[in-house]
Structures are given as C-alpha cells and as structure tokens.
Image (cartoon, rainbow, N blue to C red):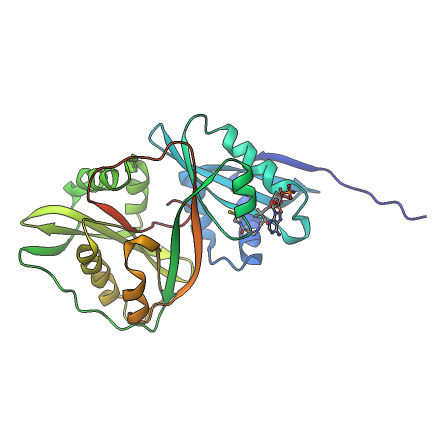
Length: 285
Ligand SMILES: CC(C)(COP(=O)(O)OP(=O)(O)OC[C@H]1O[C@@H](n2cnc3c(N)ncnc32)[C@H](O)[C@@H]1OP(=O)(O)O)[C@@H](O)C(=O)NCCC(=O)NCCS
C-alpha cells in the first residue's frame, strides 16, 4: 500500500533569511535578479512567503507609495507547486495589507488570469528592451536644453517631477534608488523638466525611471546613459505609448518581451505633460 503524505503549505511574512531561497525561485523562472536586487527590493518593501517542509515555494511582495498607492510584484510559485492555489493565497495576503490603496502590478502572461480574478484591470502595456550591441545615439538637444548630473540639492526637484508624471508620491523610493544610482537632469532654459537614473540590476544596467516632458527629452536623457555604457548590457522597460520602442529597436536594443500593467483601484490622475518613459523596474513601476 502506498501512503501519500501531503505536507502543509504555510504562509508567513518574508524575512531577510528567505532571500537566498527567493533568489532560487526567480532563477528558476530565468528572471535576471541578483541577490543584491532582492535585497534592495526587500529593504524597500515587504512580502510573504509560502513554505513547505522548511522550503520557500512561493513569494509575493509589495512597495508602498505615500498613503494611497502601492505596487505588487515578485509573485512567484515554484514550478512543481503551481496550480494549487498558492499564488492566489500569497496575493490575497498582500492585498489585505494594502487597504484602500490603488495597486499596480506588471503581469506576465501566466499572471494575467490570477490578476483579473483578484479585481485588477488592464492599464497599459510595457515593452522590455535590452541588449549590449547597440549603437550610441547622438543626443539631439534643442536650443537651451541641457543634460547635467544631479546635484545634492536636486532631490526635491526629482520628487516633484516624479509626482507630476504619475500623481504618486515616489519620494521614499527615489531616495533609496539614488543611493546606488547615477542620475541626470534635463533642463530647458535652466528649468528642470525631466530626469533619468541608471543603476546596476540583473545582467547589467537598467535605465529608469526616466521622466520627461516629451519624447525628445526622454531620448536626450536615455542617449546620455547609452553613450556612457557602450557595449555593456542595458535594459529599459518602456510603456508602449511612450513611443520609444521603434527608436530602441533601431539602436539595437530589441524588445525581448512585454508585460501588462494591471491596476486595482482608482487611476491616479495627472494633468501634467510630464510622463514616465522608462520604469525603475517592473516590480517598482
Ligand atoms: C502566476 C503564478 C504566480 C500563479 O501561481 P499559482 O500558485 O500557480 O496560481 P494558483 O494555483 O493560485 O492559481 C490561480 C489562478 O491562476 C491561473 N493559473 C494558474 N496557473 C496558471 C498557468 N500555468 N497558466 C495560466 N494561468 C494559470 C488560473 O486562472 C488559476 O485560477 P483557477 O485555479 O481558478 O483556474 C505562477 O504561475 C508563477 O509563479 N508563474 C511564473 C512567475 C510569474 O510569471 N509571475 C508573475 C505573476 S504576475
């Protein structure tokens, strides 16, 4: 007689000790996160793990912005445990902590059905572009336009621009990202109108967030970083409607996949022409 012993899956808050196993889950999915990337995400937010026989078999995390918005991400269930309700339980746990916040997540094709079931609606499509063999674009600056390094006093300017682009308070996130990022500001007539960050992530560098008043401004900022990273692996996650995809393809930064930004709750309104042209990461938006 064969007796099947089914061990229980338990859900609990994620701790720093879980990060090594969380990394194994993302590697199994062929996601590019390094241990440092998980650490940064953990320092900025919080999450839950599903555990079976002392092994982490699933994760879900969230990051809070101001008091009315959040992103949800790094939702992973190890392949052998998928389809058993673990992903749903983890996401429900996270959502319980988010009260009345508007929640965004970037869903993979596999994650779309579950997101729909949990009340998320499709918001916009995001293209993931990456590569190392790109040609460096010539930054076409308009008269009185400049791209300059961010100075110490610029932090409030970045926060204002980020808020203008999304209607969301991203000050805590920006402060944390700036500790490990390089940043440049776009000025027109000496007035800051946009900025872009570059930092180590995954297989190389990620360019984002890039916040700009128009496509030309975004290209000027991104061209600055590509010029400094010639021949090195760079990644950008750009909203489909940003208009950047064709240009990135022409440069030799092909689109490798796409995700769908899903939203639960009221959309954030922003009447400003300033927009987000590339994301910090899919998890952080
Ligand atoms: C997406 C994911 C987290 C779902 O976790 P899971 O534990 O397998 O999901 P659940 O068992 O809780 O199923 C919830 C729903 O997801 C859907 N689903 C589950 N597995 C799926 C699969 N392989 N493909 C498509 N949809 C799937 C089903 O609609 C299911 O609802 P149902 O049981 O009522 O039919 C998991 O498949 C995964 O880790 N995928 C790879 C990582 C990833 O893409 N993460 C991003 C998520 S946005």
